Amino acid sequence: MRAALLESFGTPLVVRDLLLDAPHAGEVLVRVEAAGVCHSDQHYLTGDLRCPLPVVPGHEGAGVIEEVGPGVTGFAVGDRVCLMWRPRCGQCPYCLAGRPALCEAAGIQAASGGLLDGTTRLRAGGARVHHLLGVSCFAEYCIVSERAVVPVPPGVPPEIAAIAGCAVITGVGAVLNVVGECAGDGVVIFGAGGVGLSSVLGAALAGANPIIVVDVVAERLAMAARLGATHTVDASSEDVAAAVRGIRPRGVEWAIEAIGRPATLETAIDVLRPGGTLVAIGLGAVGTTFSVPLNLLVQREKRVVGSLYGSANPLIDLPRLFELYLAGRLPLDALIGQRYPLDRINAAFADLTGGSVGRGVVLPWESP
View 1 (tube, helix red, strand yellow):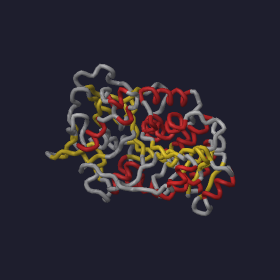
View 2 (cartoon, rainbow, N blue to C red; view 1 turned 30 degrees about the vertical axis):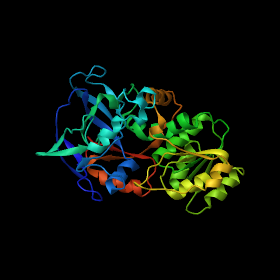
View 3 (spheres, helix red, strand yellow; view 1 turned 180 degrees about the vertical axis):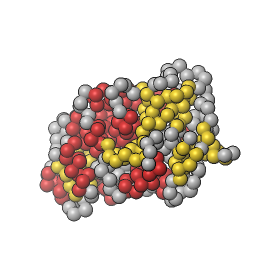
View 4 (cartoon, rainbow, N blue to C red; view 1 turned 120 degrees about the vertical axis):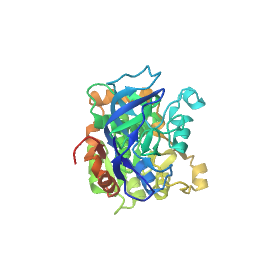
């Protein structure tokens, strides 16, 4: 099969033929129909985040099951599925408490570059190739644990199913699962990439008002306005804190940071009203820190919380997101940006870092 291979950090991806073993017990072989281009993958490509090399990136995808391994009973050949980069072992304390985004099994995949048993199914000749986060969907096929897939209902296109598995569940989930009831509350969202725009959709769905979006790309801000933002702030030319206070003089109840930059995190805390909460959902380089004024935190009772994968329970939340999409309540089609064949994957990441609008999607079977 053809796949995009990262051989060393900071170098372009190489599309080449790799060998893929048959699925082991509890695993499924998926023909990848679509894979989203995410900033988290970009962090691995540059080495800001580390993983075993060589590796096939791609953690946001969807496809059709073509083979099932021994013992698989919940899925069958022909099933359409959304891929998840956070498995659910069902046995660790976090899974048992209904917080599978923190499943301990994810650490096995991340550290080993393998699947849940710590071994890989990918080969380049006689050498092993690693999986990224147990998915590796920048490829024509991937093998994943049956605990890392969710059924996709009829009527949901592959591109929508793919981005739902990371960008949408992260952004919408941060609102529905962490912010919660916020009708009439002010929300400011930093970053209008795929995850930030998903947060806009979540905030609009929940009835937040105003919904303020901050970015440096005018086209992204225009997209945010079309998806439900009531106000936009161009951080390349405006004082963000002053602009937010001009809209909401006492500050906002909620801030969502979808970039992972210390400066925007610090601004987000600054524009909160007393008792407000910052929800951090953007990843940065390993070791990145930011400053919080202690007295501001204590005397004004501001809070800072993190949210991984939308703090979601995907077996419940992804079907709900698909239902909302099919009902016309979540216009996810508007999130889809440019489509790329696998051979243009480096162009996809160049566009991502250059400020492209919407979520780029790789279609592995599309001709160049």
